[in-house]
Image 1 (spheres, rainbow, N blue to C red):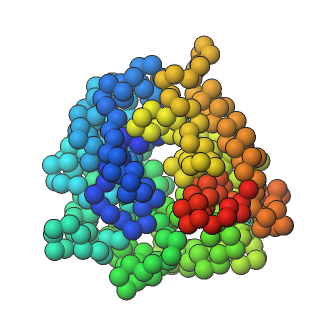
Image 2: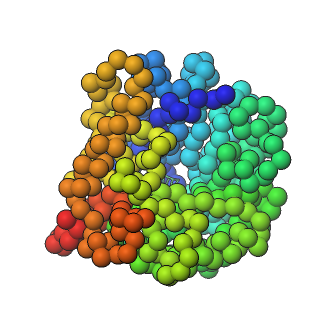
Length: 369
Ligand code: SF4
Ligand code: SF4
Ligand code: SF4
């Protein structure tokens, strides 16, 4: 059995050349171009006790030593899954498939937005290269006959574990070429009709625009309808407050900040996120002046007591989130909402911290404190 309990989520590099319009990593951060070194990754395994990694960036395959990193993981018998745009070369695809076959790479969650865009120097849409890599990786994973993520007859569950696609609904609801979000997903599933089983949908958690935003809620209702009709599954990433849907029955995808234990993704099993400089963050969005620049300045220097380091890291995570959220306070709209402190503790810190940063940049008086 794979031990995913001792999991770290690593931003192994800042860089990404893909230029997705909805990307939450600002260009200035990508330009810093930091990379985690292999000795640092080895210390996370040997000293901190990590046995499984979620690898992300930037685009992780643009790390200058990504192949060597996979090799080191295999040598040290640790496993990983990763987020990637899947637009890499055939040679990178070959190497990744090798590590799928060795049981080192357990799953990949491919970004699948904006594939109808033309990109780079190639006068082609992204879809062509993405599809080539996706189908090869799908086949390699499907052939796995043993291990935690082997196919056991339920395509949705299998894809959820191995290859759930990732799609973000952009804040400005920008159309992909001539298609809106739902038309785009309908188009995409037809490109890979027998290999489209599960998609993870994310909201742009950059600001307070989500409060009572029925336009976004209606899109989720429409995705739900399409999923039912076309037989694929979808689940949400991060917080989805009740107020984005018109009043009525709670939708299965509503997720809130339960019990003030931190945001929903923090309860129970949220990975401990580590930046290239070794700092531990709650999540990318919750950083910032009003949020938490970090939870722990450096994961190696934390004052650990004897024993398992994971419960200590999690406890510090929750303590810092609750402390900072209490300091910021929920927006006025939340405090007057019937859901507040019944089944929602208000918009997450990721949204609030980013709203503060935007307001500050626009020299607008801050209204969320
Ligand atoms: S591939 Fe990922 S990191 Fe790169 S621009 Fe797109 S969303 Fe951002
Ligand atoms: S408490 Fe705030 S975030 Fe939660 S449902 Fe109400 S208005 Fe939305
Ligand atoms: S605080 Fe961060 S991890 Fe939690 S729901 Fe918000 S964006 Fe997601």
